[in-house]
Length: 89
Image (cartoon, rainbow, N blue to C red; front, side):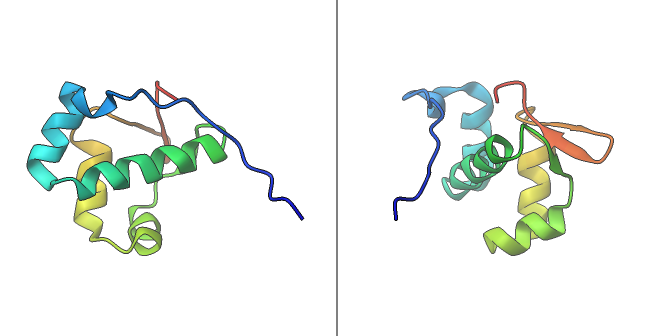
């Protein structure tokens, strides 16, 4: 049985965005993978996921402080009323 999948566009030069560059400079390329994992979750959940850094860090198997920094420190995501979203999604 075929698995149903969805597609979202991804700019081939997203890594050159100044916010992304700053994040990578601080945390390395692992942060870029984490960023895209969060973006995928946003696409799967109508651009709205619960702001639960402990849960995100558990499922991505990374340190919670890294998750908090990626979400809060670079202007890549919006945190409001206990949820994460993105203007780009």
